[in-house]
Length: 391
Image (cartoon, rainbow, N blue to C red; front, side, top):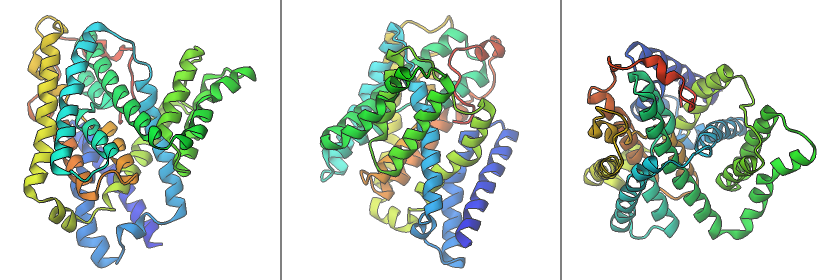
């Protein structure tokens, strides 16, 4: 009963944080990240553990909660992958994406080799990918909010799609290559669109429902959800089969905002003992894991935007470099996946999540949260990329 009360209270806190954030002109995911990074650990430290005598392991133990987490994981990961897989190659976006991915990735691998020499090769690769990720939906929302020019918005979002496609695909392939026998079922599931085509089932919404259901099953049985998800969408693309969310956009948005995102964020955080995490990591290492990913990503972004032609007349390159450093939900889902697979420790999870929050807040701290007076905000609304508003 107390466990159910805790999770109901958490969902209420996230709804309240989102509402208060809107009053302060914050994007919902920023409010949610702030609560998850600072509010939930304090709640655990000063109330849940001493007053209710509940540990993080107990809070995530119920079967019904793991089922809800599986649903949340499928909803959020499926939405990210459906955004990522629709990439259209553009030369200028590729020029930005290459150094924006390569520079932080190399720095991340080097950091893993220096700070964590005993880590496995997959953990080292994952560490580099964490440094490189850019959050597609949050980047889009920042650009939408400030009324960024349409063509410039498309280039930056497409750059983020290229980077995230590289990150998810590389990790999925590397993870699968270590356990070749475990690839059979995910690859079989990825061929489901072919079976649906043979049955003459072409409804886009039904394909979307099957896609999210398969991701949930893969997460529940610890199959390779990344290979399944990417393969499924590539198969759909090869068949020229349209994709649609299984629910109305407004319902899907509410499901993400009020259930899926709070569960995913809290599920990882409650497993962390802040005292031991800080003791294991130390303040110097914490500072390194916050500063180095941000600086290396900014450097890669700067090289990329300098290499490509200006996205529009009057474009300020350092601002675009700062915008491409946004992390947000894409990184949190990736970190949760790494924590669940045992590829990073709780202390590393906490440090990298703090880095993600700071990187996501940087554009706002740099005064980039106000709409640009020279451009029509409504023009951005008609961009072909429309991720859900709170991812």
